[in-house]
Amino acid sequence: MNKYLLLIILSFFNLADKAYSYEIVILKSSASKLNQDIQEIFTEEFNQRTPQGGLKAIQRNQIKDILITKEEKGSYTSAIQSFHPDLILAIGSQALEEALLVPDVPVVHLLVVHPEKIITESKPVIGVSLSVPPKVQLNEMSRNFPKVKRVGIIYDPKQSSEVVKQMKALRPDLDFITLGTEDISLVPGLIHSLRGKVDLLWMLPDLTTTNKITIQSYVLFSIRNKIPLLTFSQKLLNQGATIAITFAIDEIAKQAAVLAMDMLLHPIRREQTGLVAPPVHTKFNPVMAAKLGIPIPDTRGTDE
Image (cartoon, rainbow, N blue to C red):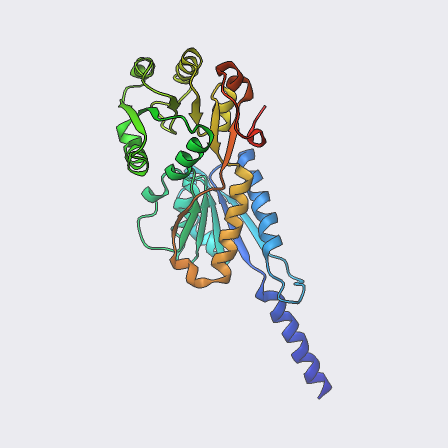
């Protein structure tokens, strides 16, 4: 009798251990240091958030990473299924495409530009957006520059018309001077044409109008006209922008771990697919702010 009781107890502990041990496959679109850092941060955060259920699990989560190559695109499904994953983390667009080929496995994605163009059918997929919602950006802009009423934006209608439309709808109290072009060579001239018409110049994450070729025109306009230059990127902040409303990569990796655990612990959440906004940080370039004679409202967000 004691022998059977012992077997029951051992079985109970074995089941308790496995109840909170997960198999995760991480698909990476490249072997870059950035992707490796994201994998490490995600793994650490995910392991920390794995509930113990009152008993410390002996068996840890199993994390398997797979590098996606263009040459073998579309051939990873069997390999992924062989691990019987509870969830897939896809880092990058190519990784997301591969993850979607695996049936009946929930997916969390990061670093994917326009995921809605890749996710074409109903599937338990959720990810962290690569852009800060317009409403959040506008609120941060007004909080830091309450006197700004005229906002200048140069944009490519094919890429950013929806964002511009949202901004105008969200803040009818502001005067948006928006100039559209699909020709990168026209951007410097359009920026110059805003002289005396705007209180702030806004760089969108638009490949046509915001890039290595146009950044100098934005910065020179900001300096010559003594108006702040708002951007979405820490890198552009370092190149001469005044203020950046952005997010940190390590935080979106942690956010992905939270989403993954939420999907695993609450299966009903798998039906709530879509995008979540990244944690937002507002940072300043104090050197540029000083040149423009602009006081920094909150020095906690400054960036040297």
